[in-house]
Amino acid sequence: MMKAPIRFITTIARIFVPILRNETMLHMKYALAILMNLLLCLATIGQTVDQMADSILNLMTLEEKVGQMTQVERGEFENIQDIATYGIGSVLS
View (cartoon, rainbow, N blue to C red):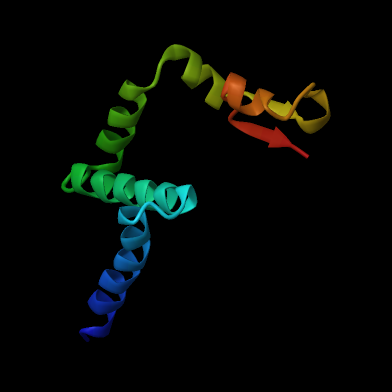
């Protein structure tokens, strides 16, 4: 029964130790993603799905909401970076 928490701690240590040693930016990205997920989990404890959705939507600007509802065909992009620039929600292949 104790194996799962030990694996979790070991995995976290493998990610954070190189960051503390300043080894790679990739490790930092992974650590940041894990930290953000942990914070999101802690922030949403005890909330309903509707409350979680409302809290996320309240953080978004109108432009971000419109971008997330936009679906574009892949051939319509001049540059693949347009997905990030315009916050496109989905791409048709």
